[in-house]
Amino acid sequence: MGRVTDRHGPGRRDREIESLEDFDRAVAHGDLAGHRVQSVDLTGRTFALLRTDTSGASFLGCPMQPDAAAKVRADGALVFPPVPDLPFDPYRARLYSPGELFAGIGEGYEATPDARTYAWFRRTRADGDIRASMLRAVHDDAMSDALDELLDGLRVVGVMGGHAMARGSEAYAGAARLGRELTRAGLTVATGGGPGAMEAANLGAHLAPYQDGALDEALRLLAKAPSYAPSVSDWARAAFEVRARRPEGGASIGIPTWFYGHEPPNPFARHIAKYFANATREDGLLARCNAGVVFLPGAAGTVQEVFDNATPNYYESRGGPTPMVLVDRAHWTERLPVWPLLRSLAAGLPMESRIALVDSVSEAPAALSRLLAA
Image 1 (cartoon, rainbow, N blue to C red):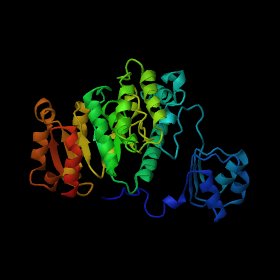
Image 2: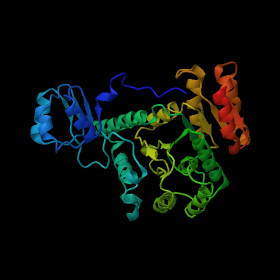
Image 3: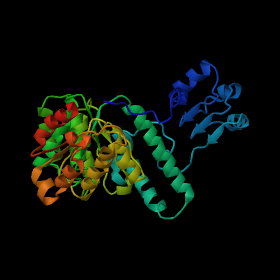
Image 4: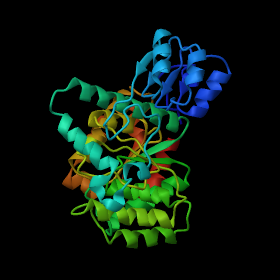
């Protein structure tokens, strides 16, 4: 399958500095001219900054001593200083981990960075403050940049489905087995990062390296807290209990949003790209699924995702069409008759050989494999 495109063009990545090790290496090999230094604490690198050419460089959210900051500005570098009193770092260079977003869960979900960031978002999104909207945009672009770096060269398959799918249900267990099988097949599972079907697929990916009984055990443990309502804290603690028993899990991606911040991110995705702008998040998630998307039964959100994915496949605006597998014939032909419209759209186009409808989730991996080979 194709590689995720480097948005910045050839030669850009080797000028990005995202750690002190990267910084020291760049200084040792010459200068910092034209480099981009992202969210690195440089308060202990004053001497290096004073003696190194930083012309044309950009420093995004990098703490430094006042004399060092004055010198790099005099060199003509752009300096975007850290923003105090924010519950998130708008310049961060890496995706989130579950432990970062849920830090402090022992004191209750309200104490976590995820909950505090959602509270900040709710306070600022409607006030028209350009400073807040700029910080959200910078953060989301940093997420996209980190996501591109992580997924470069990977075969990514999306699993979409409803957030209301409860732990303890057979549907949840089926979605978890799907995530496990796709991961064992060498694909990287990506979901919307929330609860329900999304969590189940990330759970299956996490437990893919273990014997099958590990998933059965996890499903029993999680059934004690079937939903994030009424208590996100209890819901999250049950997930972290599963992670503690099986810490070395398989990698998968969650791409949630604070736009729906009342729904917490699930703790089973190893890497979490959480966005403020839901439209950016939705489009970016589907665009990165270069090995196709499996659509489990869902409601309005999942229907939207079906056609958000179908549109570039229809116009081939991202290259050749990627596979789309819809699961549950009755759901997609009777309750929400998406399949007849999708099939009519695809008729006579290359897209036609890349769509499939299956009766059960157990059939989805084989259907995806057939479409990938088509």
